[in-house]
Image (cartoon, rainbow, N blue to C red; front, side, top):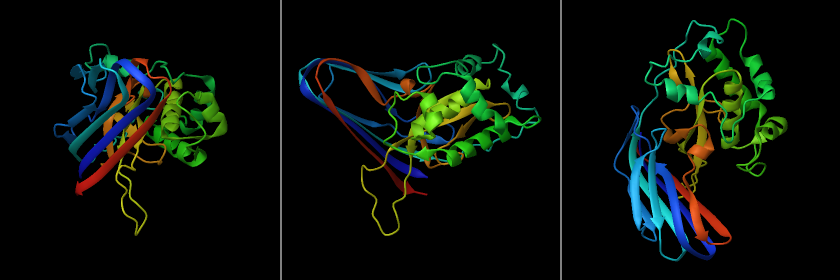
Length: 290
């Protein structure tokens, strides 16, 4: 599939901002199954400094600073990209306990994998998370069987409720209430898997949405999406979408990945002044060709 992706983030401030330093992670990743043309980037007001580089996770990071007074900030990114199917998962004969063995330090990906086994800002390992996950991992069963069953259970046992949580809602509250949004479900599964000893990372991106029959697509009405990937022998990083109970397909467009949402927030920074602020986000995932 070929898509035209547009993502606009705008902040309107109650008072003047005199200085702003920001990081944007709004540029899609180039991957074997995701080929990106150069992005068109618009920042208003015009930054005094603008530098693009990779962050520690290989995501495209755009740093910029605004040094003139302003009462609004708008960052827009437009990218044309082609998305194809992911590699199929590989069934491994190892039991799930043996599948948790981490790659040796001589492996080029060893550090990236080991980092994803540890606690992070929004994901803390716990006995409660391990206890919830354990029924999916039967004795003698494979890791692939276990993660697919856990993905199914979160989809079936949790209710999508946009008004229930915020980014700061603890995972134990999400687990207790069985409610949340895609970000919560991704964090929950990551916490479950790390609590059992697996390496799991947070994936941020976009999902093509299809309007109801007879209704037009609403430009800018799409939304960002979140899922996860777990590291398994044979399959490498296997993506899972617990919000939809599926394996991500070519409709899932990857923007960035990290330990949790804190590593991949589309736009964050520090500023002087501003007071209260109003955030507006518009996302459009427009299919061009199949």
